[in-house]
Length: 475
Ligand code: ADP
Ligand code: ASP
Ligand code: MG
Image (cartoon, rainbow, N blue to C red; front, side, top):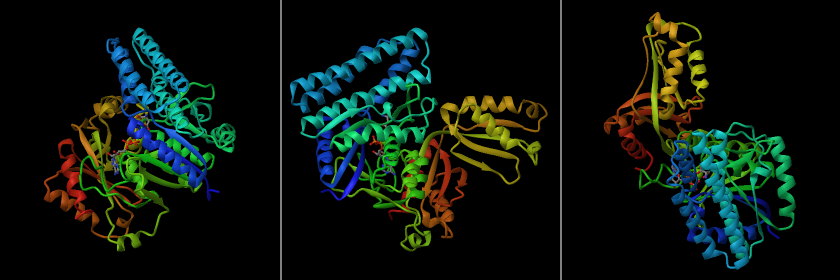
């Protein structure tokens, strides 16, 4: 009898993106069954598919449908190649391909409708984006079945119930708990592995929503928390959470353990290896979380651990543990001598920003109160500036506010480590390192948790800043 009960495993886009990867996934699922009595599989869309779907919708909204046949055939080829190679039973293979085909047709219909309307609402974009995961569960479910695994594809729209905040929907945990248990437990009790869609849910009325880009990790956390599972494993294409993005620094190393508060900062500040919302449900439910590599499954990966006293980490010399970067940001500054001591400027400023539905990853304010400066994603910068100019129109006219302006593209670089909390001189080391490498810092912020320090640098300095700060970790 397996010792542990329930395991939730999520496979990312690259992990299901090719015949070779899907073979690896099949073996991983088989192996997991030896250790766990109940296994739930969650999958992303095959790599590149979500982007292709959303690009098709974006083009359609400009009336461009010429490239639809190309998108259609590329989706068909990608999924059918895997089906042909890995689904042995002809009937099952043809049934799977025909279901995938219907979903591809629904994309074409949606794009044509978008082209007629000349716009794509967030609601329709979520339906378009959902097609990737919905195709993938059918493919993976049949591949597993073909390999002798008792598996069943099931859409999470039947049990992840969310609000109608399309593109960033929030789950209703109470209803989701009831529905998830009701739909998944009977399968699990019959030794069936549910293969379900990451990333998507539905409103109580059944309209499809998504949890945000990269949201399949969050789906795994939600399902893990509500079942509840003993463990959640996130399978990706690197050996776990690393000291920095291995695409930027070749010498990045895997962290065997990382605390919840560190990973929360890392995920928030751009390490896209884990969606930032993943952490809270698993921490609240006390579930073990592990990040591991589909292409190197014997590697233990990274385990998340409860927060340890920071000085014990500092003693281990692990003060700065990781470096991250968020690109494509702009720094927006509101400045004016008339702002000094005027109550409510910040509240009004952030109210105006919120009205544009923009989130602000970093804020700094000079102690003189003569300026407020914060970062916003580049694509929202113009609407933020417009909203600020409108809300402060009379102060601008009276010259209490001199100007509201923004920089060119910048990046937010963050160093993370719980050991920084009680270690003097970390900020000094960080800025010396950047200075020695001629990376100019435009703004600074330190989280109140003191687990991270963030700096803003010009876009061109991003890689230089990450590389040089990484030298503080891997000397
Ligand atoms: P998946 O499709 O499996 O969800 P993602 O592409 O979303 O995978 O996330 C994995 C990628 O995150 C890695 O391939 C890596 O390039 C990138 N990444 C960025 N920062 C880190 C980091 N600190 N540790 C590991 N990977 C990172
Ligand atoms: N397929 C979705 C995306 O590309 C969700 C995910 O991969 O987690 O954003
Ligand atoms: Mg991801």
